[in-house]
Image 1 (cartoon, rainbow, N blue to C red):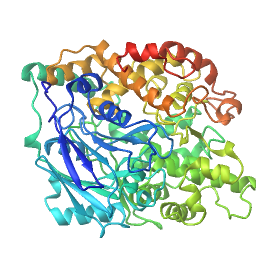
Image 2: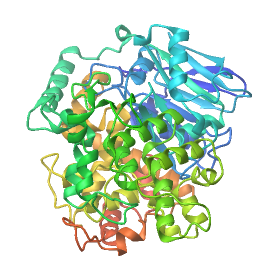
Image 3: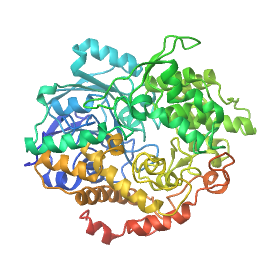
Image 4: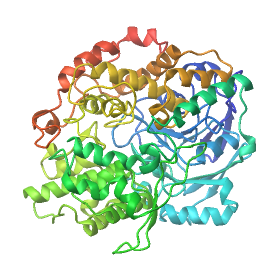
Length: 607
């Protein structure tokens, strides 16, 4: 392949046979789908949309992009792509840290696993080779212990990354996930559950920086890189190192902001604010009381990761990374919990069990509301903010004990078990993240039309609605949100395929992305090409879902958001006008009630 930035080597691992086949990337696929998310989705599509997510026939892809592991800013992301056992959709879930860069430095653009090993195995990757090893001694262990054992086994931890599942993935919890280096999660969609179904315990990677790719045009690349870095460093941007809110407080800088404006769903989204309790789990509170370090991912000047240590109370001595906004909301406001130390404990437990810390709060909050309303029919109760009870139920979920086994199938399952489907705050089976669409209308249509179930990262509309970038829109207005979302979805489909951190988009735009991709790979590329490529990827995902039965009427929100007005300051009286936004969105997409017509597929060269 003529493009730079790629190793042009993907390992296709047949776990059933215990064999590895090394293949190049078809240049047409690289040109159309770039890498990481886009290329992974293409592989999952070609494998057959209607495959059972937990069958040996499903594939599990660990994918890099052409800028991964380079000197590009914030280029330490890896996409894990598969068919989701939680939603039945295609899903890709990204993690930061160093494993993505090390996979590239070890000589690979991706790893694709298919089949099922007869006994537990892990994959070891180094110097362009993949070997499979017995993991029977690791099966049943938490992620933290697994990482420690692998580091002791292989040594030189500064050049080693360990991506592992925990008991949740092994026990086929449908939101089991892969955890990278103890605390970085490919959280959403149940990718770790797919790993568990294949008896794949871990992926261990050794790679060294000196083996990184070099750009096609060194001087032009330097100019593009420096321009992008200048936007990130600019003091007016939230990314500005040691000065911008994202760098100073981490992602949890949003807790107080969304809480104040009536856009923080609390108590299973019964209300749109956590009131004065929001401050107690905020990034500002964390920085003042328990912050001990702020490490970075590969090639990142922002350092949004916030490492904390608990120095008193029942969780004394807990050291973890970290109270990020989404999981802090899920285990905090969503569950009526204002104890930051308890939030840290719950996130750490989820990471060790290997289950999505955003999703895990949903079956808990459903149980809490069902308890409050008297719906539990003798199945005990769980009170709002009961951290000890939450911790015990997290364990029962991970090991599928009793009612925990119902919760392990997601919020929809436990709500149906109690006979009250309306308690599940999900879209396409996946729980919402930390934004209430009555206070941030763009997130409402964002959740509904996300190709991987409720998600803020398909198109991060709060960037526009909260004024994080120069493009500003009223968070309580619905007009124009459909078209705004379409543009962001296409942009992020492209950046996820490079694979660059989403937070780069708080400073960079399509021009910066096009310049970096073009000068590194040697392929002429424009800002218009960025959006067109992103549109192709987003439509391929939608087509995959259409073939799986997600058609007219599938883009919906829980009725709580569309029929129960907010009662809190900032958004009082508001509901989410999803139906009105969908009309605009479908028109701009060229879709027919959520279905991609054949003409659009041909226009984008998908067919």
